[in-house]
Image (tube, rainbow over the protein chains, first blue to last red):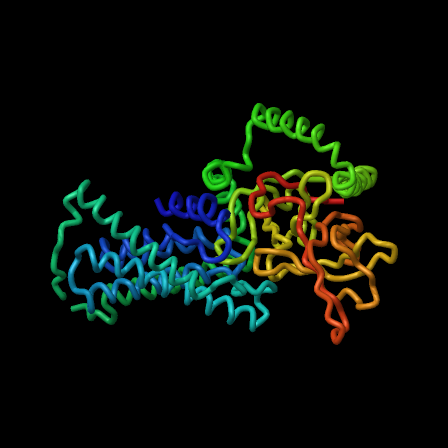
Length: 166
Length: 268
């Protein structure tokens, strides 16, 4: 599933966008995982998603894995400590916040590695960078809204529920 | 009784951290390379299909069937016959196309060795114009090699190469710079730089050089693996300021660079 999502993003969406892609289904998938899974399976999923990402990346090996794992941890703690319930709007918020965190972490990695001469290409000279990140976060939020309603109509697993702190 | 030093959660965090360090180590030493190549090899057909689907979905106007092309060709021929009356205007257009045609013929006569590759995706670095090709070191593709479209329009160069795949940076990417000259009486030199993935700009053209709109810009061959004479584009506008040492020109590529499907890498 992670591979399918990644291939759709890399070969179907990204090649036809200039700047930040308006939608990231990888991040939607990550938000969905953070929403549904407990921390341990979430970490393994993020790990595998990140590792497959590395094959296509120009950043030093491991960067995407670390960024994906850090994003999923941030989303998990956001859901469990601040949002405290599993319903439509927490899911939408996860998608929005996830997009922002992920893009900022990648941007930071690109700047740091370029400054350290670990990569020869500066991967952060992006047209409309900040509006692009904001637009992606908003579009991901809308997509999460639709996805949640769609999934709730298909399965009973997406009914509203409060989270119990263990 | 066994004492628990760490709880399960911390153990998993540690395990994943160790796994990442191990993977980085295995990648750096090259042990992981066969696994990476296998992943890419298995995914290649799926990516190809997804890219082609994306091309049809997002850029359908560029993917016309042979029948459609035949029809539009006929229409163009009719239009050309009618336009013969406006001989003067058409003459300048013909001159331009002849010049480009001559350029293509020139490249054919050079007998370069090509490796045809298909674009199958884009590197996951938002905003960059780095595309993934389905050919790699097994097909003699090396870093620095020029990537062309049709018979000689430069579209990018190889920046990374693995066994079964390589990555090409488009000439419009901000990181791209190519030594070029303008095909005029003095072969005015300059450097064509990418502008945020959107356009091309030729910089560092000496003020003393006389340049005109529609003149053709070609590679100068200053880079080791990029031969001289590959078409980069035509001058679309010129910016000259008397107080500056150099003049700048906007360059228009004859092809739509962000809708490419099949390209050729010059391997020799």
